[in-house]
Length: 227
Image (cartoon, one colour):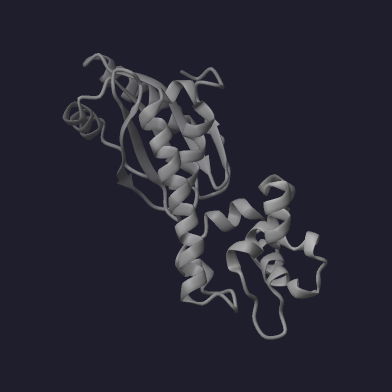
Protein backbone atom coordinates (compact mmCIF):
# COMPACT_ATOMS: atom_id res chain seq x y z
CA UNK A 1 0.00 0.00 0.00
CA UNK A 2 1.39 3.44 -0.92
CA UNK A 3 2.20 5.67 2.05
CA UNK A 4 -0.36 8.23 0.98
CA UNK A 5 -3.11 5.61 1.31
CA UNK A 6 -2.23 4.77 4.91
CA UNK A 7 -4.04 6.47 7.79
CA UNK A 8 -1.99 9.47 8.96
CA UNK A 9 -1.10 7.85 12.29
CA UNK A 10 0.21 4.73 10.48
CA UNK A 11 2.62 6.56 8.19
CA UNK A 12 6.23 6.06 9.31
CA UNK A 13 7.15 9.74 9.60
CA UNK A 14 4.05 10.74 11.52
CA UNK A 15 4.29 7.62 13.68
CA UNK A 16 7.92 8.38 14.56
CA UNK A 17 7.19 11.99 15.47
CA UNK A 18 4.21 11.02 17.58
CA UNK A 19 5.54 7.88 19.32
CA UNK A 20 9.33 7.90 18.88
CA UNK A 21 11.61 5.78 16.66
CA UNK A 22 11.29 2.67 18.85
CA UNK A 23 7.64 2.38 17.79
CA UNK A 24 8.64 1.76 14.16
CA UNK A 25 9.54 -1.60 12.64
CA UNK A 26 12.80 -2.08 10.73
CA UNK A 27 10.85 -1.85 7.48
CA UNK A 28 9.25 1.44 8.50
CA UNK A 29 12.56 2.97 9.59
CA UNK A 30 14.20 1.94 6.34
CA UNK A 31 11.28 3.28 4.33
CA UNK A 32 11.77 6.65 6.02
CA UNK A 33 15.37 6.68 4.90
CA UNK A 34 14.55 5.58 1.33
CA UNK A 35 11.67 8.09 1.09
CA UNK A 36 10.35 6.81 -2.27
CA UNK A 37 9.87 3.52 -4.05
CA UNK A 38 9.73 3.05 -7.80
CA UNK A 39 7.09 2.47 -10.44
CA UNK A 40 4.86 -0.39 -9.31
CA UNK A 41 6.66 -0.81 -5.99
CA UNK A 42 5.95 1.33 -2.95
CA UNK A 43 8.68 2.37 -0.56
CA UNK A 44 7.48 -0.05 2.14
CA UNK A 45 7.67 -2.94 -0.33
CA UNK A 46 11.15 -1.86 -1.44
CA UNK A 47 12.27 -1.68 2.19
CA UNK A 48 10.87 -5.14 2.87
CA UNK A 49 12.70 -6.58 -0.14
CA UNK A 50 15.97 -5.07 1.06
CA UNK A 51 15.58 -6.81 4.42
CA UNK A 52 14.27 -10.11 3.06
CA UNK A 53 16.50 -13.20 3.22
CA UNK A 54 15.97 -14.13 -0.43
CA UNK A 55 15.69 -10.81 -2.23
CA UNK A 56 17.83 -8.65 0.06
CA UNK A 57 20.35 -8.79 2.88
CA UNK A 58 18.65 -10.88 5.54
CA UNK A 59 17.71 -8.19 8.02
CA UNK A 60 18.95 -4.82 9.20
CA UNK A 61 22.33 -6.13 10.34
CA UNK A 62 23.01 -7.63 6.92
CA UNK A 63 21.96 -4.43 5.19
CA UNK A 64 24.18 -2.28 7.40
CA UNK A 65 27.16 -4.46 6.50
CA UNK A 66 26.49 -4.09 2.77
CA UNK A 67 28.86 -2.03 0.66
CA UNK A 68 27.88 0.46 -2.03
CA UNK A 69 28.74 -2.18 -4.65
CA UNK A 70 26.58 -4.78 -2.86
CA UNK A 71 23.63 -2.40 -3.03
CA UNK A 72 23.89 -2.05 -6.81
CA UNK A 73 22.13 -5.37 -7.33
CA UNK A 74 18.89 -4.03 -5.82
CA UNK A 75 16.63 -2.54 -8.48
CA UNK A 76 15.37 0.85 -7.39
CA UNK A 77 18.47 1.86 -5.46
CA UNK A 78 20.11 4.58 -7.48
CA UNK A 79 23.35 6.34 -6.57
CA UNK A 80 21.62 8.73 -4.16
CA UNK A 81 19.88 6.02 -2.13
CA UNK A 82 22.98 3.83 -2.08
CA UNK A 83 25.06 6.76 -0.85
CA UNK A 84 22.56 7.54 1.91
CA UNK A 85 22.51 3.96 3.18
CA UNK A 86 26.31 3.74 3.23
CA UNK A 87 26.43 7.14 4.97
CA UNK A 88 24.22 5.81 7.77
CA UNK A 89 26.71 3.00 8.36
CA UNK A 90 29.63 5.44 8.42
CA UNK A 91 27.79 7.68 10.89
CA UNK A 92 27.25 4.67 13.15
CA UNK A 93 30.97 3.87 12.99
CA UNK A 94 31.95 7.43 13.84
CA UNK A 95 29.44 7.69 16.68
CA UNK A 96 30.79 4.52 18.29
CA UNK A 97 34.40 5.64 17.77
CA UNK A 98 33.60 8.95 19.45
CA UNK A 99 32.07 7.12 22.39
CA UNK A 100 35.20 4.98 22.75
CA UNK A 101 37.44 8.05 22.63
CA UNK A 102 35.48 9.70 25.44
CA UNK A 103 34.98 6.69 27.68
CA UNK A 104 37.16 3.76 28.70
CA UNK A 105 36.71 1.01 26.13
CA UNK A 106 36.70 -1.62 28.87
CA UNK A 107 33.69 0.11 30.45
CA UNK A 108 31.73 -0.30 27.22
CA UNK A 109 32.45 -3.83 25.91
CA UNK A 110 29.27 -3.92 23.83
CA UNK A 111 30.22 -0.66 22.13
CA UNK A 112 33.64 -2.15 21.28
CA UNK A 113 31.99 -5.21 19.74
CA UNK A 114 29.51 -3.14 17.74
CA UNK A 115 32.25 -0.85 16.52
CA UNK A 116 34.38 -3.77 15.34
CA UNK A 117 31.37 -5.47 13.74
CA UNK A 118 30.70 -2.32 11.73
CA UNK A 119 34.36 -2.07 10.76
CA UNK A 120 35.07 -5.71 9.92
CA UNK A 121 31.75 -7.51 9.53
CA UNK A 122 31.37 -6.89 5.80
CA UNK A 123 34.97 -7.67 4.81
CA UNK A 124 35.28 -10.44 2.23
CA UNK A 125 38.84 -11.30 3.25
CA UNK A 126 40.31 -11.92 6.65
CA UNK A 127 41.55 -8.76 8.35
CA UNK A 128 43.62 -8.48 11.51
CA UNK A 129 43.02 -5.16 13.26
CA UNK A 130 44.18 -3.57 16.49
CA UNK A 131 42.45 -1.05 18.73
CA UNK A 132 45.15 1.07 20.33
CA UNK A 133 44.12 2.45 23.73
CA UNK A 134 45.67 5.10 25.95
CA UNK A 135 46.51 4.60 29.63
CA UNK A 136 42.86 5.33 30.49
CA UNK A 137 41.76 2.68 27.97
CA UNK A 138 40.22 5.26 25.64
CA UNK A 139 40.50 4.73 21.90
CA UNK A 140 43.53 6.24 20.19
CA UNK A 141 43.18 4.54 16.82
CA UNK A 142 41.99 1.47 14.97
CA UNK A 143 44.35 0.08 12.37
CA UNK A 144 43.90 -2.80 9.95
CA UNK A 145 47.43 -4.19 10.07
CA UNK A 146 47.20 -7.38 8.05
CA UNK A 147 44.99 -8.59 5.23
CA UNK A 148 44.75 -12.24 4.24
CA UNK A 149 42.77 -14.67 2.13
CA UNK A 150 39.31 -16.00 2.91
CA UNK A 151 40.79 -18.56 5.26
CA UNK A 152 43.97 -17.16 6.81
CA UNK A 153 46.18 -14.15 7.32
CA UNK A 154 49.81 -13.67 8.31
CA UNK A 155 50.29 -11.61 11.43
CA UNK A 156 53.76 -10.36 12.37
CA UNK A 157 54.11 -9.68 16.13
CA UNK A 158 57.03 -7.30 15.53
CA UNK A 159 54.80 -5.01 13.46
CA UNK A 160 52.10 -5.04 16.14
CA UNK A 161 54.68 -4.03 18.75
CA UNK A 162 56.12 -1.34 16.48
CA UNK A 163 52.72 0.28 15.88
CA UNK A 164 51.88 0.01 19.58
CA UNK A 165 55.02 1.95 20.49
CA UNK A 166 54.35 4.56 17.81
CA UNK A 167 50.90 5.20 19.29
CA UNK A 168 52.35 5.16 22.82
CA UNK A 169 49.47 2.85 23.68
CA UNK A 170 48.92 1.54 27.19
CA UNK A 171 46.75 -1.37 26.03
CA UNK A 172 45.52 -2.94 22.82
CA UNK A 173 42.43 -4.90 21.86
CA UNK A 174 43.11 -7.40 19.11
CA UNK A 175 40.49 -8.25 16.52
CA UNK A 176 40.03 -10.18 13.32
CA UNK A 177 37.14 -11.32 11.20
CA UNK A 178 36.02 -14.74 10.01
CA UNK A 179 34.44 -14.36 6.56
CA UNK A 180 33.31 -17.99 6.89
CA UNK A 181 30.54 -16.81 9.22
CA UNK A 182 31.62 -18.63 12.39
CA UNK A 183 32.82 -16.48 15.28
CA UNK A 184 34.39 -19.40 17.13
CA UNK A 185 38.16 -18.99 17.54
CA UNK A 186 40.49 -21.53 16.01
CA UNK A 187 43.44 -23.09 17.80
CA UNK A 188 45.68 -20.87 15.66
CA UNK A 189 43.77 -17.81 16.91
CA UNK A 190 44.42 -18.84 20.50
CA UNK A 191 48.13 -19.42 19.87
CA UNK A 192 48.50 -16.08 18.11
CA UNK A 193 46.76 -14.30 20.98
CA UNK A 194 49.12 -15.82 23.54
CA UNK A 195 52.14 -14.93 21.38
CA UNK A 196 51.08 -11.30 21.03
CA UNK A 197 50.12 -11.08 24.69
CA UNK A 198 53.58 -12.31 25.72
CA UNK A 199 55.36 -9.94 23.34
CA UNK A 200 53.34 -6.90 24.37
CA UNK A 201 53.82 -7.65 28.06
CA UNK A 202 57.55 -7.10 27.53
CA UNK A 203 56.82 -3.43 26.80
CA UNK A 204 54.23 -3.17 29.61
CA UNK A 205 51.22 -3.16 27.29
CA UNK A 206 48.11 -5.10 28.26
CA UNK A 207 45.89 -7.13 25.95
CA UNK A 208 42.49 -7.01 27.67
CA UNK A 209 40.64 -8.74 24.83
CA UNK A 210 40.70 -10.31 21.38
CA UNK A 211 37.41 -10.08 19.51
CA UNK A 212 36.50 -12.30 16.57
CA UNK A 213 33.91 -10.82 14.21
CA UNK A 214 31.73 -12.87 11.89
CA UNK A 215 29.20 -10.67 10.09
CA UNK A 216 26.81 -9.32 12.70
CA UNK A 217 28.14 -11.68 15.39
CA UNK A 218 31.22 -11.43 17.57
CA UNK A 219 33.10 -13.44 20.19
CA UNK A 220 35.20 -12.09 23.06
CA UNK A 221 38.26 -14.03 24.27
CA UNK A 222 37.94 -12.31 27.65
CA UNK A 223 34.30 -13.29 28.07
CA UNK A 224 35.17 -16.90 27.25
CA UNK A 225 38.02 -16.96 29.72
CA UNK A 226 40.63 -17.43 26.99
CA UNK A 227 42.84 -14.55 28.17
